[in-house]
Picture 1 (cartoon, one colour):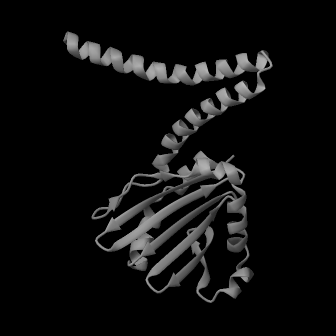
Picture 2 (picture 1 turned 180 degrees about the vertical axis):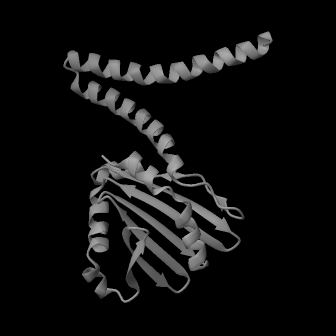
Picture 3 (picture 1 turned 135 degrees about the vertical axis):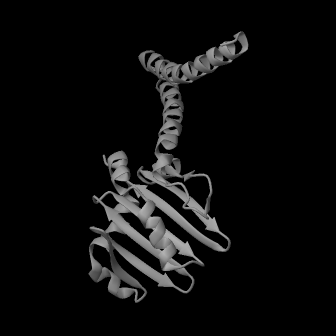
Length: 195
């Protein structure tokens, strides 16, 4: 290994170590502020640390949304979990896949009061009777609902009472939506998001 490569490697290791220490430093600053009865300062420092930890968690969870199938392209993962904090917390992330005019979006929501409300519909097919386009649906052993409306297909699945996976296809076929259901790792989603 030549000197330049060694230096680059050393700086990379140092930078990754510094980012972990930055969070620890924020937590220590929050603790120090708390110990000095500076409660507002403690909250500010700890909120900053929480935001940084949330960024790491979001990056870690982004792998739950699959890579695109052959012939499709995918957007970056959009994570709205920070916004969910204002509505009781939870996870909310999505990714959009396109192929020409076809579009499929996979959205995962978990551990949120909003999920509980949505899952009430899925878990009680009698409530679906008010919407003639909404039908009970099962994928493998998971309960869900399916709505076909003009050029849109929406499938919503309940996982373990705390997680909702929604697959919405626009200008595409039911087979294409099924293809996306088949590439989602539901076991990985459950193990990562169940509290």
